[in-house]
Length: 363
Image (cartoon, rainbow, N blue to C red; front, side, top):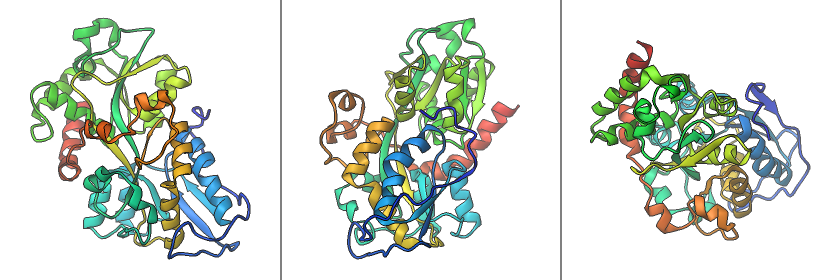
């Protein structure tokens, strides 16, 4: 599906998909379609972009008779850095793919618009957990968790996070150079480091064990990447045999017949709420609010999450297949079993953790 399109043009212009109904999904906003209506949405590239355009963006354009300008530049950290540097006017109206630490920081720094059911009527339907993990400056439209993937042709299934962090002990010399590590600009790296600390008796409040484990792992690492999409070619061409990875992308690539398996190690996993927000300096705030509300629409949710192998932002959607329900978060019981670390703590300590990572991996 579009997994070879990672070096796409940094901005894609999506032309008008049609003149649909001009009435907004929920009160109080009613938007009249005009040729000049345009919304700039910042989100991910790669296979995410292909699915997002088809299931979410194109139907939105058609319904509201507008043009969406798609900006696929940057990670969540980099995108928030643009919001901060521009004092809330980064050039895009919707920050469609932030993570909880950025939402918390954006609220504190007053750079993201506060959101309520007035602006986003569908907020009344979201998981209770969503209101716990972020303040009211964004929405959680998607849930995933940190999985461990492995090359099924080359190595046995890992059972512990130690199999990734101390790979030689499990797999021997053959795995040297086939381990992937992620830059802490990707929250995936932070979550994996927290699991590294846990296997040595630490955790989010005791991260020193993680740095010892990272030093042990370094000689075995063959690739270090930032963006999740950038990792995909390494899995496909079998350069990487083991790596942490977001559950949605992992399941997507497994379904595309990449030679990988996906598992949750015995020590458990960490959940991620993918978030959307509106910078305070957005040019088209009303339409931006409509877009966030649209992302929580039941049909849009169903179509996107089925295609991307991610979990929905609301628990009241029905019709999921048994296979989908077996690997995704669709019930309150499943949600309760996922660990969500304190994102405020991560936000406060991430810079220091990144510095430690850089000292070890760059030395």
